[in-house]
Structures are given as structure tokens and as C-alpha cells.
Length: 112
Image 1 (cartoon, rainbow, N blue to C red):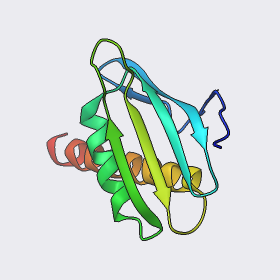
Image 2: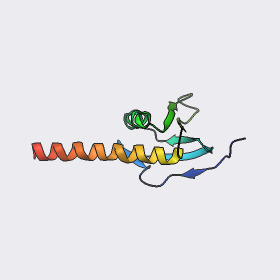
Image 3: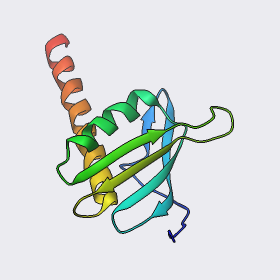
Image 4: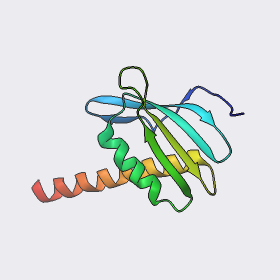
């Protein structure tokens, strides 16, 4: 039986997109997987996050389900082969943040 918890991840997993903050709420935690509900989901950030998670050799699977658009909140599920799923999610978020920062710095350097 899964352990049910309600917790909100702190930074760096509160992500600002489209002038709102996307929050992750832990809804299920197992040894090799987590399920997090995404509040104020921004798919322009979720899809790259999923891509980054799936690049991690320790991640067995990562998926994003939306359910009914008016009744359900989107849920991100991360299953790992090795390590902690929370660590994989944090690592992916940090890598994605670094990619966006590098892109911003490049644009500012080249365009002034």
C-alpha cells in the first residue's frame, strides 16, 4: 500500500512560467517512484522536464497525465531503476534551469 503524503516541494521545483508559479505537491511516495500533482501546470515547462528526466540513466519511466481538464490536476510520475525518484526530479529541474540560463546569457551576449 502506498504511503500518501501531502507536501509541496521547495525551490528549485517551484517554477515560474507565464508570470505564475508552478508548484509540485507530493501525493504518493514509494521506494522507487513518486507521483506529484502539478498546480498551475505550464506544459511549455513540463515537456522539457519530462525529456530531461527520460535522459537520466537512473530513470526507468517518467510520464505526465492530465485527466479531465476541469476536474483533475495533472500528475507527474517518476519511476527510477536506481537512486531516489525525488533526486532524479530535482536533478532534471536543475539541469533544465541551467539550460534556460545558458540560453538567456547567450541571447543577452549576442543581442546586447
